[in-house]
Length: 275
Image (cartoon, rainbow, N blue to C red; front, side, top):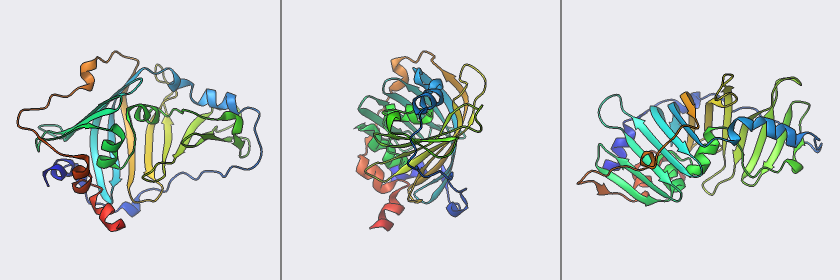
């Protein structure tokens, strides 16, 4: 199907079993720390006041068992606006995804196909297996946290704090008692399956000090997606106009539903194998 062809321009077969192992995280023992609120505040200080983020993102890994390597540009704005553009080596973009609040559009310029007025999390789930809306995408890529319950935290040794949140669990780590706390992993529960975000390579220079430059998003079943994102050209709190989160639909572009995208896209093989 045409809706599959444009996306698969960025996909190549690879050995997904060769992917590095996920971070080994501690179990939460029964000890309740007295410093959980302080640790959480320190770990999320860099991302709490972000209004906008722009970045170039190198993507590698796999979706639905197919290897992936691509480059994207991203623009994210609070409270819930996003633009992702998958850049082709030449010619038109592979796809353009824009979302504002609960409305999303995915344009496949090469195929002249478009998904309009979809729920953002459903559209991204169909394309990449990652069930994130625009607000959650900004929080996830910046290594931030929402609805965390520091009062219910547990500790594992001196340098780990495990903090429950409404949609999962946050893992805070510091290298030593004098090092800063970092949010290094967050496990999420979703209807489509549990998944994890991992964070490394934190920036040390302003204005984006403390933000991660390496993000990994992986489904815990090891099948749906395992994406490694390298963020560069990171800028924060710049002005992004409303036109950044709109896309012009060329004349003659034909509609495609999310279900059609899901059936023909990179997750199709894993979905059929699961039946």
